[in-house]
Length: 166
Image (cartoon, rainbow, N blue to C red):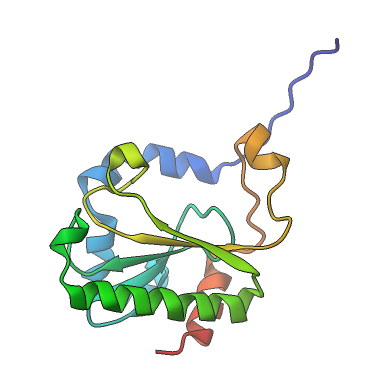
């Protein structure tokens, strides 16, 4: 059996891994919430009365969006009904914009409640919207723990903002 090693480079992961402790100490969603002048820099795509949407800096697929309540809460029960309703409506509207923009065929929409469930930021609830296409999974994530994202966040942000209809 021939032995070989193939390196798959994902340098963007280093920034994520290096900032895990810092990110958990400081809530990036609260920082984004409090700095609307930096929306383009922070990839904030829309703001509503009770929630906002931001592109995931470390996406699972092109257009991976987070929808977050303005309130820094870790429990669903702590959110008022009005906030939950606005989040659901924002998920509906965001999937509409993403479908128009990316021509995706479906979505994974979900929330991780607590660190043990995979929440990277367990103190501030947020929903993930992950655009999907038929055949978009391949060996890269399974074998190499690498995701191939074909478009830069700057362009995705511009395209989302252009298609967002409040």
